[in-house]
Image 1: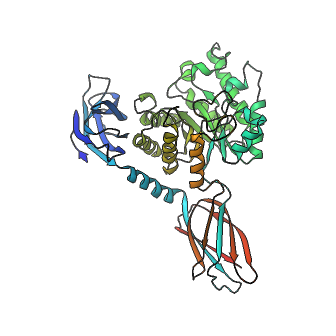
Image 2: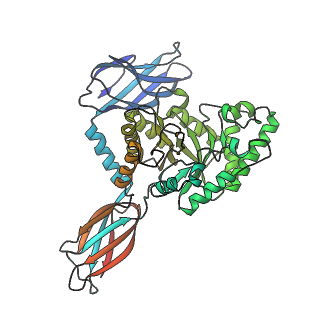
Image 3: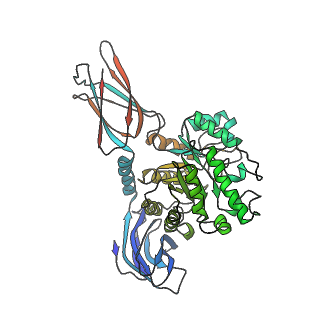
Length: 490
């Protein structure tokens, strides 16, 4: 539905029995003066539901995107509001689009086909190039092409069961605490990278990529104990030394760096060293490792529409500020610590950030404990995997015998919990887990399949007086060509 010229509120009906959610496809917002945050809020029978936010300006229309999950039926009113009650808010061309569970799933399937898969036509012939009908083809993907993994910690180094469970599933990881400044330099000038070194070696031995987390953390609670008392000049030197120390040590061994962690919610370094300090950190990082993506990393941007500090618009503005001051090679890290996921809002937030055209990952995915934890985890992972702008996913589920941060995937004997079952199910769906696809060639000697991008082993067997078979490697790569042709001769 489209609503134009809506100043204070718009009335509509929710249909919880039919709808999964409502997308706020667009709303153009302007304020009478200044530059202030404006929120879209639905007033329902049970209370208020936040659906989106934008930093609106005077004399300029700003587009707001958002959405919300529908969990009730009945009348609702859409309001646009700000904490600044002295300004007027103008809204135009509001577009709302309800969608069902079936439409949500269909959208995922279509997106996955376009983003992650490619149609392959395998032709089997004899040595004279004559098509062979009724040949059996078995296709096994060697490794999941989409980067999907979980955090680990030093517990994995001495636990064989943990190692076996983890390495049989994941292709990418992040270290929970072993690369953080307070771990690497607990007292000034006395560095300790022993745990991080061991974890890097472990990952390399098993072909697992590593995201570097994190170089600096803007939260004042998580600085090394000796840092807060430094003078400005001393802190500037310490920051430069920290960036240089860790990034030179692991240059070429990580696929990305979280350079300044959570600097939308916190500003420890900018408060001490000035508003250009975040950009300065990225410039130093780029000079040390010019070929690796340098991420911002933040929470609540896609998890909670009520958190204006880390809204998609605020994130976009921070990226552009860092870029304007000389930061480059930037990437978008979305921590993704969910309570109850709001899938329409999650999608719209990623859409907004995707317009920047930068690499974007879900970096610390977990869901709070509760009866729907596994269900909500599956929803979040599916939404992230299907979105064309998300380049990888890491869950924040490093195992500890005393309990994980918020969400474990296994018990202490490495038997799957319901969350672990969700992970294994999705791995198989997405082309991992050693799943075998098989079929038989038709009269033209061909078999068609839609395969996830990645490396495969293809085995062709021809039944006869003396059975013959051939094994070949096949790479399915993302290209503009809709179909890939592959010929096997027996």
